[in-house]
Length: 106
Image (cartoon, rainbow, N blue to C red; front, side, top):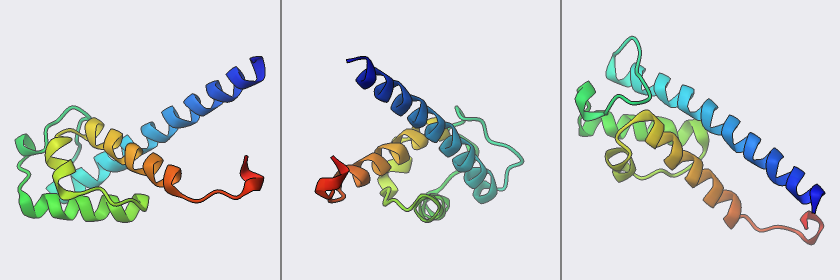
């Protein structure tokens, strides 16, 4: 049981690190597309001057950067950088869960 707890703890640390990296990268994408010097993780997309064209550019860049397929609607629903990082992380985890595994992976 102790070994399993260690595996879970390592997994949680990896996910936290993954989310932190995503937040930073997504904030950079937002600031570049929106033409801003910096973007806070709590700034709201529409409050920063976001529109449908900029949303499309952000979604395309995020999908390209992380190899996921976050939908356009996700940006409007995940209105902050932090919320979008959660959506990207969820998409990555969904992608990993849907990948076929060999018997050797178990």
